[in-house]
Structures are given as structure tokens and as C-alpha cells.
Length: 551
Image 1 (cartoon, rainbow, N blue to C red):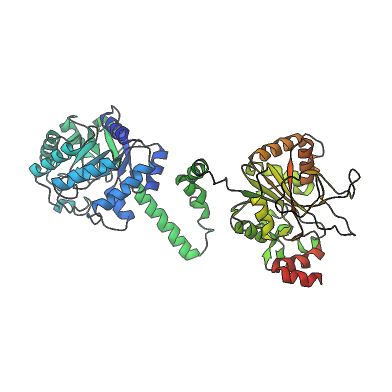
Image 2 (image 1 turned 60 degrees about the vertical axis):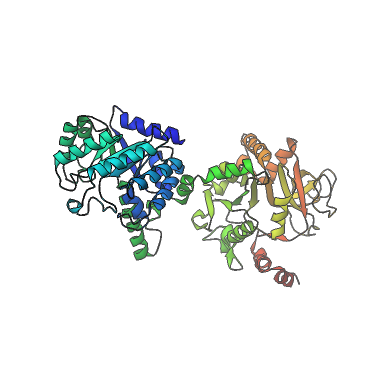
């Protein structure tokens, strides 16, 4: 919102034929919350701004400190901000500088009160507080109006005569003088618990200029009473700060007593809501637009829904992905590997004992039909995660960091897979055998090899396999579209629920999608049975421990 549109919008609220409302805010975050709630304007409360800074509402904050907060509020909100400017922070000259600076930062107006500087909050011994000389205050109003550059900028004069116990006649006399001096509206203040003074003032005032009220002490009065009285603007002057204080006290006390977040987690805003209010997503979009070298940050999707055949003796209370390996679960090892390579958005598809799947910073999805379905069903359960730059892998993998690093740093390709070209074992069943367009010549970052088939057959088209797919793939934007399309087609087949990731890769190849191969030579393993656990523990402890196991 531009300065001009903000000032005009506030003036429209004051001139409205309906009663309008301003909501207190005291920070950029609270200002955005007020705007999202639907309010048309913000009251930058001196009490609330002082309170959130931990000081008294006695002009203990300097006017520049107040404007620093107001500027953040203007930046965060899409609605006009009216500053509760106390007495103007001094005499007419202080007010002139305040108006100039307030216009520069986009404030729509200022409300000043006819008390002496430094002020004391009206609800603290208000009847003992001295009021400013009428002529001096009128000069201050004229100075403010003469200083403003934007004709629509609003100056509201706040009359404190009823608060100070000077009576209705004095309140009306002062209001008329302030109106004549150029005030755009009059705020009449009262701390009685009923609206009698306000209603009488409104009747006597007879709409000579817009009337503003702050019904803090007479809060039980129905709003229709104000409408019938011709009040133009109602200010909810301190509700947000009071609500925030009450909630913060409750949360702090509960955490101190219980020493756990469990008691409050469901009652407080999730971190995602804080990030949304901070507009974190807008920054990511801006980075992609304005910084050519910044790519969309990759995310990882880990498939970990199985208990693990052959691992039943150690997985009665946890899925395979949570098996302890060298002091940490398999999942925690994967999380650490990804974070070391700068991949911080991590998702897991769980199934068997999903309640036991836990790791810091990981989002968990559930394949409820895990007992009778395969990997593609798990992938389907997290289809919304697949966007931009995504890495999909089995949850039982351990690998040296360079493998993931090379996959992330490889030349752009819609889809890439990691294939181990190490000699295959002579005995035992080996799955996910990869047949590629060329064998591994051990060249660095070779980008011309594509996948032709993944199968368990030791011979395909009269050829020996070129290696073994380790269970890790990467898909970028174009590849994600191809994967989604292939998945939708495969779901039409009667055996979809039994299909795995190799079936998806073969389907992509059949659709003439180039699936680029990144060759590695060892330095990874998967955990399929009890015999793998010892090797996995040694692998996780480092190359020396792994070599000792092999010996």
C-alpha cells in the first residue's frame, strides 16, 4: 500500500456513513494478523508498543523507537496505520518532525492527546493528571496540519477532559477548539464502566466532525449503541497485547511446571504458521527469480513402510527404518547424510509401526495399506511431496556422503539414478540389476549413459548387467511430471499395489524418458536381513571398521 492510498483509506474510514473499526497492533507480526483478520485499519497503540518492549506507557520509549516499530507495521500490513502519538512527544516543533517522519514511513495519520509531556497512561490516576493549555494544544494541531505534505494525512485530537474529571462542558469546549484548529477527527475518552459520558458527548457534539472512541472500560456496551450515537470509528486499543500476554503467561507457566511441550503443543501456533506470517515462501520465490544461481532447494522422500522380511526378530516394536545402527536409527543416519549435503526438507512414508518413526525435522506420511502394498503405493501416498527437485530412496540405505553429493552436483537431467558398477557377488540373489546404454568406464561425471532396464534377471537381451541400482533416484521439474504421469498410468493396472520403484523406472524408459545413470563403485549398503546388521554397524562407524569386518 502506498503512502497516498493509506492516507486516503483512513480518511474514508473517518468519513464513512457506517461505524468502522480499528484494531490495535504493536509489531509487524501483529499488524499482519490484524490485516488478515479483515480489519480495515490499525491502531498503533502506544500502550501496546511500550508493553511489548517491556517499558511503561510514560514516554519511556523515544519517538524514534516508536516509529521504528510503526515502520515495521506499515511494511507488514496492507491497511492504513494510525499512530497513537501520545502528546506528540513534546511541543509543536516535536510534532512537526513527527508528522514529517511518519509520512515518510507510510503512516496514515496520528492521534495526539491534550495532556502534558511526558504523559501518563489515562487509566493510571487519570483524574490527577494535568491537561495541556487549550491554545498551546491548538497551536500544536495547526503545526501538524501545516507540516503534512499529503493533504489526506489525518490528525486526530484526543480529548482527555472526562478522564481528568474536568467535566462535559470542558470536554466540548476543547473539542470545538481542536476542530477549529484543523483536527480531522475528535477522539473522546472516558474510563467509566458505562457509556453515559460518551453518549452525552456524542449528542452534544452533533457530528461537527468524525467522532472516535476507545471502549476499553465500557467494553460490555453493545456496538449498536455506538452506531446509533453516530460514532464513526471504534478503536479496540489493547486487546491483542492483553491476549498475547495471557497466552504467553500460560505457556511459560505450563512449560516451567511440566517440563514438556506435550501439554501446550496443540494449543500454540505451529512453526509453519509463523513462517507463513513471515512470508517465507515469498522469499524463496524471489530467490528463484532474482538470483540465477539459486535453484529450488531439493527435498527427500524416504520410503520406510516395511517391517523387513528376515528382520522379524528385531522389528517387533519398530519398522526396519528405525533399527539402531551404530547408536542411531537408520532414519537418523539418512537425515544426517541429507543435512550434510544441504537437503533439509525431509519426508518419510511410514507404515508398519508408524508411531515409532521419529527423527528431528522429518515429516511423516502413512501408507495405511502397507501390509498388502508395495513401494508405488507408498509413493502415491506422498505424491504431493514430489515437486521441484526431489530425491526418492529406500529407507534401508547407508551410503558415503559423496554419492548424494555427486547426485546433487551432476549435470541437469530430468531423472537420474545411482547405479553401482562393482562386480556382483557370485552367490545369492541380487535384485535391481541395471542394464544401461553403456558400461562404467570409471570416467568422472559421465553424462551420456541412460538406463535401459532394471530387473532381477542375470541376463537381459543377451547381456550381462552393468551394475546394480542402489535404490536412489533424483527427479527435477520435468522428471516429476513424467513420474506423475507414469504413476497415474500404472495405477490402472490390476497389480499396481504390488509394484515397486523398478517398475516405475521401467515404465519411464518404455515411455522414452531418458533416465540418466550416475555410476558409483561401492561405498553403500542396504539392510535386508540379520546378517546385514553387523556390516551396517561397521559401515556406519567408518571405513576402517568396515574393512575389519570384511577381513
